[in-house]
Each structure stands twice: as C-alpha cells, then as structure tokens.
Amino acid sequence: MDTFKWTWKRINTLQVLWFTLSQLYTNAEIESLGPLDSYINTDRLATFQADNGKYWCSVPHSSGKNNIEAESPIIEEWCKFKVLYASEGKILLQDKLGMYLSRINWGGVGGIDSIMASKAEPDIFCEFKVFLDSGKVILRADNGKFLSRVARGFNKMNIEAAKTAPDEFCSFAISSGKPTGPTP
Image (cartoon, rainbow, N blue to C red; front, side):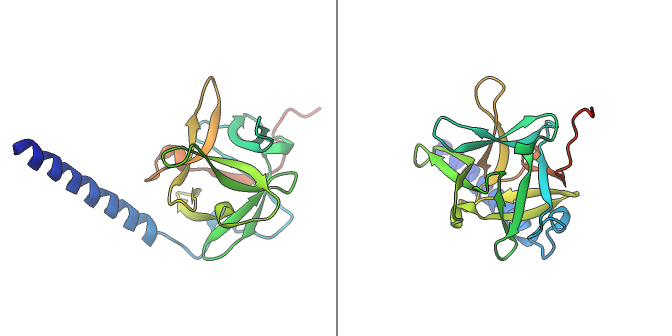
C-alpha cells in the first residue's frame, strides 16, 4: 500500500509540474515574433542556430525528403529559410527549394517526430508556434512538443518535435542568411 501511495504521489507531483510549465509557456505567447519579425513575409531569409553553434540545414534523406539538422558551422545556401506568418503566433518555414518544413512521424505513437522539408503545400503539420527566450526563439509543433536538437547516430543532430517542456536544446538564435564562411 505504501508503494501505491508513493507512486500516486509522484504521478500527481509530475502532473502539477507539467501543468505549471505548460501554463508558463502558454501565458508567454506573444503578439510580436521577436527576432523573426523582420523576416516574416519578406524576401529576407533567416537562419536558425542551435545550442551547439551549428545552423539548421536542409539535408537530403533516403526518404526523398530533406531532413532538418543542426549540422553546419557556417551559413550555407541550404541553411536559409523563408519565414511566413500562418496565424495566431504561428509561422511556416520554407527551404531553398520552396518546400515547407513539416513534422513527419516515423513509427506511430511514441515514434520519432522529425522536422523535414517535405511539403509543396502547407498543412497543420507545417505550423510552428513561436515563443521567445532571451532574444532567441522556441518553436512548438502541432503535437504540442517543442522543437529540439536531438543526437541520432554518429554526429547527426536532427531537429525534432521531441520535448514536452523546453530546455537549452530547444532555444534557437535567429540571424540573417548572409554567408559566414571564409571570404575569397
């Protein structure tokens, strides 16, 4: 009986913590999209820099779609994204080929929710809710999970809708799509 009480108490504590965190981020929803404002519905391209200092890039995947990975230490052509306003603080992102970034589920319930440049026309899976975090952005997908840098395999840093509460891996710095590589 004591084990049952302890387990129930722990579950209740976790539920209260989850509710508190979800309310904190729900209440943090904003009218301004912060550093994204100057990119919304313009020809300016934005880059997203992960906590590891690397930029999101649209990388070819065996599925025929392009996987979004935090893999380039410099801004390259495949690291630039067009930002479009969707509705109610949500955005759409397009890669260099004009494909919309979308949450793609691999494996059903409990599977991996990769972010991939995969759709010619946007749908609900392409919309990301924007939150601000000290001048950076946090994005939440349609499944309620926050986009995060996730290590998969050897040196592969996917962007996935993976976290129920944001952490340092979910915060992305925004900058212009100007190249940062060596100059000739």
